[in-house]
Length: 250
Image 1: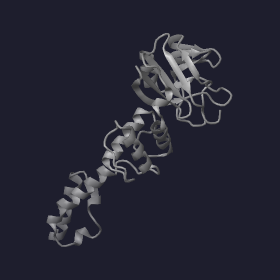
Image 2 (image 1 turned 60 degrees about the vertical axis):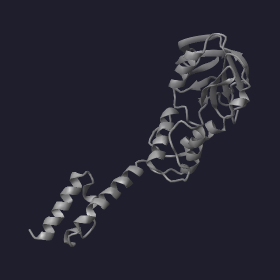
Image 3 (image 1 turned 30 degrees about the horizontal axis):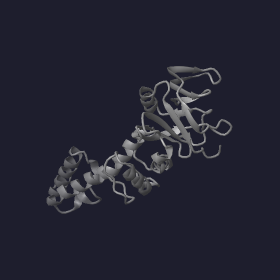
Image 4 (image 1 turned 90 degrees about the horizontal axis):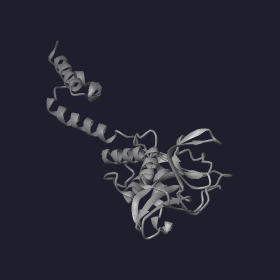
């Protein structure tokens, strides 16, 4: 084996051993003159690009970055429309929190729609009472949040309310029944963390994917599993529920 061939073999072994694979080599490397000093910079560039590109860049990258920056709590984001390792981690965290699947960091239409709804929710619109707990349901933005003594106690999260023909009625109500698992006779399905506030309508964990935009409930306020459990832990018989706005198309 000549000197050039031995050098090429050594370079390939180093690249593979470092987890880079053969992609660290460029066509013609085996016959090129020895340039050992250039190996370290090439390896560093490949690793950096791999880390930054761990999430694909979605159509709504910049918009989602802006909404996450406004909402806060998901990590540092740079509003420039360019995917980075930090942006990727923040978007994944957001998607995991609000049940967007897959939570892969891609700023697609569902992530964009959920972030937009949450960012547009104005907690002052609830006009919650100044003392005690108020569960607020914003039908317009399909969100909900909890106020305590007139201040935000639980930040806005997503819901699904009644579809056309089953519109969730606006108004001020009181929770009048609570069970950890309620059976729905009309629809033959279990309703986890059930908290009824008017007629046969109440809060409960959804049994289907909550972000299907075309799908609505039969009047109930559907919650993500974690939110339903949290709401059940906060609520009690007599807790105030304020429902305002109107779901589009109802």
